[in-house]
Length: 314
Image 1: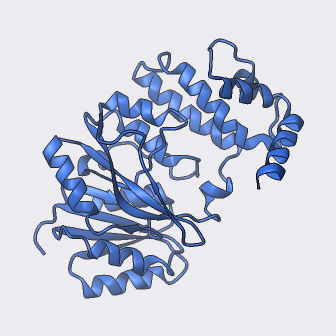
Image 2: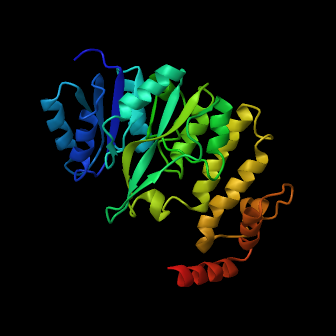
């Protein structure tokens, strides 16, 4: 095939049931100058065999087989091998909409963007669809604006659903491969913000995101206190290296309040790090975060209010 303009990277682990659907959506793009790189992250099921079969039938499909090292490292491996000028990441249980690459590439080229995000369509386990959009359409952010967006509780955006220049994914942006952390995509985005100048957000759906109630991010398996401590240690070191820690100290505190609220069932309120969060009166927050900060100090009251809400509204 000719030198591809865009590389579509698909990390694979235990997704033999959905991989064909995913790869077919990548091959069905209206923009044809693409290569598809499937990264077999040591998957124990038959997904690696399925990937090899696609590569044997399509000259624009390549497979990388490697030992399991996690999603972030699998994406990094794919980026290292990519031949395209741009990269789009695609999870192996999701799908790209047919015009995803064409639309995002046009936005990058027309508006001189380093990254372009599209909205997505969420499909729940009953097959019901809902469009997930950005608060504002056609928003262009600077690098620091992208940083701010990612360190606010409502500003979460993943590493999939966007097209970005290849060189961005070759930077030192990945979390340690020897540990699994919550919100790894956000950690990567925070580090990416140092290297981007223009990031665009557009309310044009570019992928189907299949909600999986058993995923680590949904079940909360990664939302342990030790994981959040490590997560924020990395964030704070990054901001400190850029002389931005003091500027965003209050924002980080609100994020810590938000995240440790997920650890309430086993939260040790005598822990030094937890106490520094729940007893901090230096900043003024919205009522929502002041309330959460207060309730964290009284786990039984939190549980009572949570259970009452469930009984009333579920």
